Length: 454
Image 1 (tube, rainbow, N blue to C red):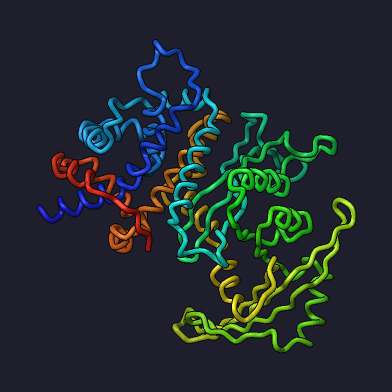
Image 2: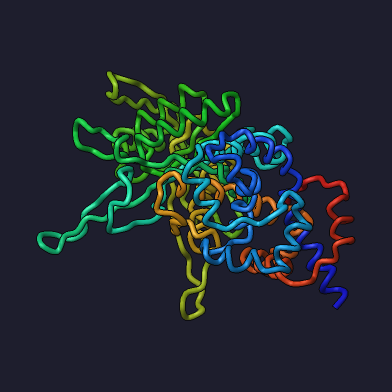
């Protein structure tokens, strides 16, 4: 019994000390958000409401109703006040909704970005850099869809044909996340696609390509001197995207599909036969790889005007052994190709391809986690555009804190044993029951803390 109590106290404090470490600066930043409420009618501070909203996602509650039911239970509330003295009173979830409906929720994302900036300046992630760059993956994801037009910003599509057709309205977001080679994905920036931001003269709604240029401009403004390596899928294998990266002095690794940029493929096929020295046999884990690359391939495009880029192409053919459905060993093969902003050689091809480009999957894994493993990405939480965005930003910030906890040295064993959802459930259940001794918790929280990632 004593050992279990100590284990629960260690898990709770280990998880929440990371949040508590950043809380003073975070709350100071959030306190600057203009509050449009009438002061005499406000029972809860703006910072209390936003901390409450952040914790609802840290603990992975599924809905506003569940938050009201669980977090206001006497024991849970007492433990929250023990862990977060800032929560002098717990609000109702509807009070948070009304706040998010009325404030400028972009300030929440800005607080998130400033937090990431502090982590970068503290060199928290320096051991995971690729060619001394921060690998940032960008990809789009649908948040949720409805059959009713509940806001004019929604995108739309038609399902079916003729009399069976119907219009569906949906929310789509272009996300940017730090995607490191150890599997750690840090949510960074969200760009909501909005109907009016499309080409209204041609009756075209917003799209990922347009959103990319808005998001990349914001990213450059927020981190003007940060060395960045963009990890992109085949949708972005086009001249305007690569030109934008060149203008911003960003590196990139972009998936090159078989049917994309035929002139580049033609040049690659012709030249790689003449350059046998630009090949490398490599063993990566259980995979036997054969890299071949061609540097300085000229590529021209005409948007706007005639433009010219020098591209570098690398192809990786690999083989590995796996078991089929009958338990028999079979040899499997795969082929990958990328466009690189930097010339390839024997010394950097493994790092750029295996440790960088292939970890673009991290952002897709992050979507899977947020949608199906506790963060309820596809749940609206509010059918109000501004409030919906506010909940989204709080969810992404909570995901950031939980990711740091998962990869922090003190909690790696817990997450390895229970899994991510199991570990968070264990911590949440510990807060909901009388496991936490106030004196020991205060002592644990008062100890010096240095974030060390593994």
